[in-house]
Amino acid sequence: MSEVREVGADGANSAVRRAMGVQYLSWNYDQMGVVGTLMLSEESENTIAWQRFLPGGPVALLPLDSTRSSLVWSLPVEKSRRLLALPDEQFVDELNDALWKQHDHISSVGTCMSWMEATLRRIGLPDGATRQLPPSVRAIVPKSRAAFPLGFGHSTRYVANGVVLVGDAAHRVHPLAGQGVNLGFGDVSDLTRLLADAVYSGQDITHPSWLEKYESTRQRHNVPTQFAIDALHRLYYGDAPPLVLLRSIGLQVTNAIHPLKVKIQIFIGTHDME
Ligand SMILES: Cc1cc2nc3c(=O)[nH]c(=O)nc-3n(C[C@H](O)[C@H](O)[C@H](O)COP(=O)(O)OP(=O)(O)OC[C@H]3O[C@@H](n4cnc5c(N)ncnc54)[C@H](O)[C@@H]3O)c2cc1C
Image 1 (cartoon, rainbow, N blue to C red):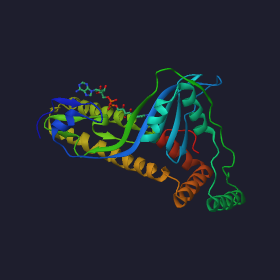
Image 2: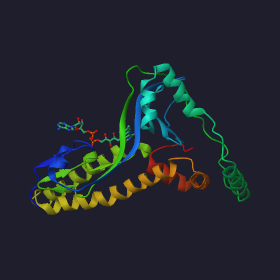
Image 3: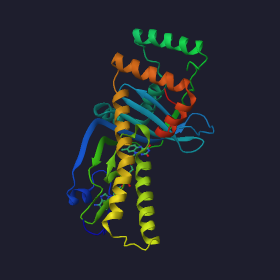
Image 4: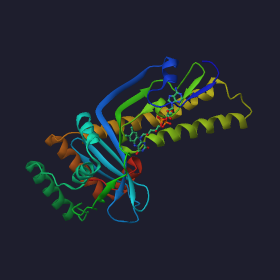
């Protein structure tokens, strides 16, 4: 391995990564992430990120200030194209529908969940029957709507031929967990820390061993996180009864056991789970 000369931070379609000639494992989710800036119906503290999982993908509102939130709505490609083409008012109607509409429950799943709620109550744990309501959206900031393809990507090497990759150039995840930027921040933080360690200990920072440390440290963190997010996407995509039952029980138990809930909230970076 040669000395490091460049850092590749040019995103998921990284030309730097291609030039490095490293292997890249990737697949598409056949979904687009529709984004936009939303005006909320009521002024509030607005400090809670809110996400609802729907059969076509999750819709998330991320607080900006007391009256505005940022939208990330994952949708099948065809539906996202249709929504992008709608006038602003109709788009907001569809969005409020997605946030608020009560869907018909599958009866076998409903029976299991009622039994589960009763059991949790009997053993003195919260049954998850009360839920925080989502905000309602008044309008979308004109021309703020856009859509981006969603996919998974993993570069098998972060370091090669004197180049080091950080951020989406090295790894790409579904936005449902809001972790994309954090993974990239972690790369930069670990890379600078390892290079600083080399300087403080009087070593040559261009020596490959420091960069190999960077690669193994980050891959030990990034790869399991990426596959956990991919598994969450698969668990929440679609409405086949066994999947619905599995995730409903999972959420109910998570909601009932507070320490577990806190751990998962920290991991996926959201504060409400429906
Ligand atoms: C719809 C959607 C919603 C998301 N929501 C969230 C979220 O809520 N929370 C979260 O943490 N993450 C989210 N992400 C992921 C997040 O956007 C990315 O993880 C993050 O932007 C990656 O940062 P980056 O700097 O590595 O790459 P990028 O943000 O892609 O930046 C790469 C930059 O390199 C530039 N570039 C590329 N090629 C060249 C070139 N040849 N010459 C010069 N410049 C070049 C590009 O123009 C770009 O500015 C979301 C992603 C999508 C698609």
